Length: 378
Ligand SMILES: Nc1ncnc2c1ncn2[C@@H]1O[C@H](COP(=O)(O)OP(=O)(O)OP(=O)(O)O)[C@@H](O)[C@H]1O
Ligand SMILES: [Mg+2]
Image 1 (cartoon, rainbow, N blue to C red):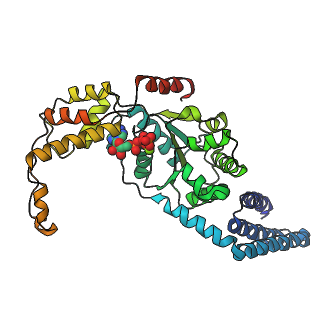
Image 2: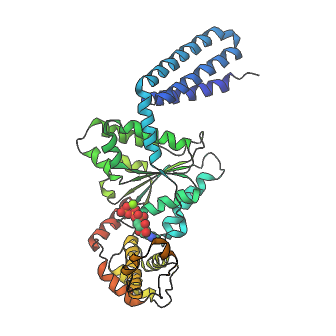
Image 3: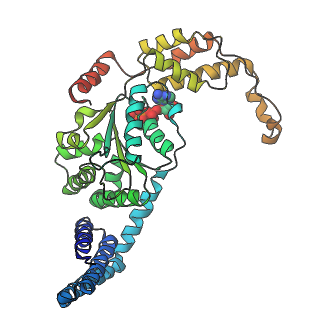
């Protein structure tokens, strides 16, 4: 049987991967790929003896390349790679957040679940899931939670990346770090790469900053180009989050055709978030509608509502346990045998809490988000 067609196809693939690794300075990958090219050339020589000499010559050329990469790696570049790798591993966290831990955001949750489900299912080649989703909205509305829930529900590897941290820590090398990041993400697929404070990258682009920062962004954008690659079935979804979508430029936006607005909670959503953050306590005496209305009026985010609930709960605890501080004379083990006194939450607890929680947002801020959403959202 003539295998040369298939062999050539895999050679081309390996060669391209070699070029890409070389370009990004991933010496170890480049070495592996060069070795692969050499092996395929040897297979070709066996398969088509009439051209055997030519193929063998090429195989030796690739072996030389692989050898020189090995030398480069051992002479120090490898150490740098190891440092990158351990930094990247430090970005990984296991997420236990589930969709149910997020109140409201029904539409947003549905859109994200769809994307993830489609990526996982068997499907015809023409159907390609998104590689990147942009989440934007005011602070504290659940963007990080959504990313964590995507990872949690898939049991995916979750890379929690702060864009500005990478730039400041790895300034000149941040481009290499990004390609390494995606290399590890592919290895540990399914993966969610969550890039927080995404606008930090865009700003560094428009300002006259170094070539290195620009290179980092262009590496990232090329990782994001197009759709999930059908030839590799590793699932790597990039979620980027920002509070200032208007700072993103068009080159970035074009890589995120899927842009999702994560708004402040409405009345229904506020109720759900209150229930989540008071779970385990008796809230049957509360007028949830009244509390939720007030949350909306005061432009509360999910984070503000979580704070509100904590404050209210503390008001209840302090009232029921007047001598709480005095209990500090007991050892931890003695405390284990005593119970904290609790009672059902009351409206009064919340009224006092409302005074403590202030949202920094104004109606104008919200309008700005809505306007951007209308123009660029989708
Ligand atoms: N929809 C929600 N349901 C339940 N809890 C929420 C919700 N939104 C926010 N919270 C609470 O607020 C906290 C902060 O939310 P999160 O970190 O997801 O906000 P964010 O949008 O990423 O904010 P930032 O833009 O400041 O990074 C969460 O840990 C959670 O306790
Ligand atoms: Mg966040």
